[in-house]
Length: 133
Image 1 (cartoon, rainbow, N blue to C red):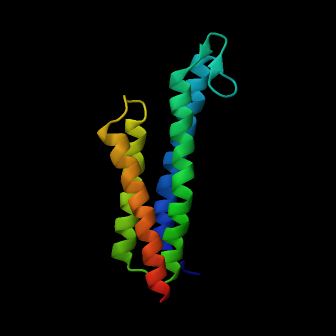
Image 2 (spheres, rainbow, N blue to C red):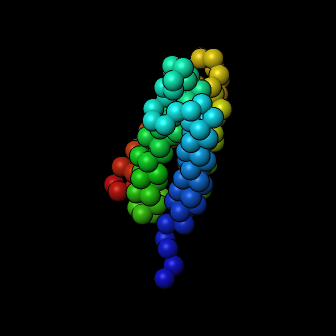
C-alpha cells in the first residue's frame, strides 16, 4: 500500500530525529554537570543544562502542532510544493532556534527561529481552512 502522506513523513522523520539529537544533548549535558533531574546539581543551578532542557522542550512543543497541521494539509490534498516549503521552513527555523538558545538574547537565530516557526504554523492553519473550502 502506498502512503499519500510522503511529504509529512519526510518532515516528521527529519524533525523527530533532530529532536532526539536535542534529547541526547540534554542527557549528556546532565551527565557532565551531575544533574539527575531538572537542572540543579550539588553546586546549584546549571544554566547550560537548563538551556539544553528548554531547547529540547521548546522544540517538541512547537513541532508537534506544526507536523499535525502539515499532515492535515497533505490529507486535504495540499500542493507538494507548498507542503515542502512549509516543512522545510519548519525544520530550518527549529535549527536556527536551537543555535540561538545558548546565545545571549535577543539574537538573530533565536528570534528568526521562533518567528518563522509561528509563521509556518499560522500559514498551515490558513492553508488547512482554504483546502477544505
